[in-house]
Length: 213
Image (cartoon, rainbow, N blue to C red; front, side, top):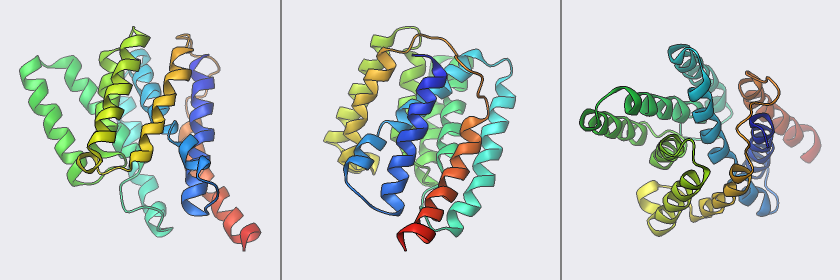
């Protein structure tokens, strides 16, 4: 399974999750939707490892985060900051981990996680830790899978610490696509996520207005 296919799975499961959140439907939609964020976190790390310019990567995600937040607030979908803020801070953390000594990096990463909690980004501390786990385990799928399992078990045992529902535990099933990931890029779809993210909200809103009502 290449990265393009992995991203498609992430987009489809995200659509299912947000459809359930906005319109409703069977609980299975949000359960399957739990796979979306870990896939995007995984793809972010792969993007970091293969990008030629980390600063441009950061800027692109940061600008997307800011531009997308206003319409999300206007539609009253969520009180937390959108997933691009989480990805931006997570990318910042792996850059810090990569460039600074272990003592300074721990302090700076702790500060970034604190900021993520204070400003209330989507998935909060859980989201940042997952990105770090995927980065630290890069090159060994089993290490990445163990990292995913441990973080989700921690979440399940201490949901209040992460400010997330225990339903997030279903994201452990992301181990299946991760296991079958072959390390190949696949089709070039650099901006697919950036385009799909705002569009899928419009599609769901259209369904809500013109079909459901």
